Amino acid sequence: MSNDYRKTPEALSRLTDTQYRVTQEEGTEPAFRNAYWNNHEPGIYVDVVSGQPLFSSTDKYDSGTGWPSFTKPIEPDAVSTKKDWKLLLPRTEVRSSGADSHLGHVFPDGPRQAGGLRYCMNSAALRFVPASSLEDEGYGAYRHLFTTENQEHAS
Image (tube, rainbow, N blue to C red; front, side, top):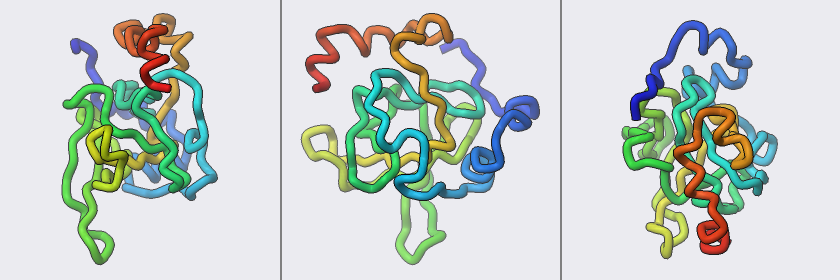
């Protein structure tokens, strides 16, 4: 993609305190008290800092954890991962590849038939773009994810 998804001072200045704490200070928002854990609308989730497309509702599932969970990123290179030793056991942190925003963590306990991964993300790190607004917001390249055939397949 030719878009530039870097972090800018302007983008950071638009973040709420929670969005800043999560994306820039590796914070975590409360389970079940966040914007997208229970969102079932078709669309994509983009980095709240840069607008980089990160995840699709076609890969979202209810993990029971209280955070939005996905089986994979929208593009393989949309995210990067690194080991996080902040708790007693190592976790794998997930960051946006463009703006290096902290998004959440990936765990090996996702749906086996979909690859076995659970990308457990913070809603505060994401902005939801409804499928009906993809073209208007410059994400028309992802329209194919929401064709009738793909919607039936995802259900």
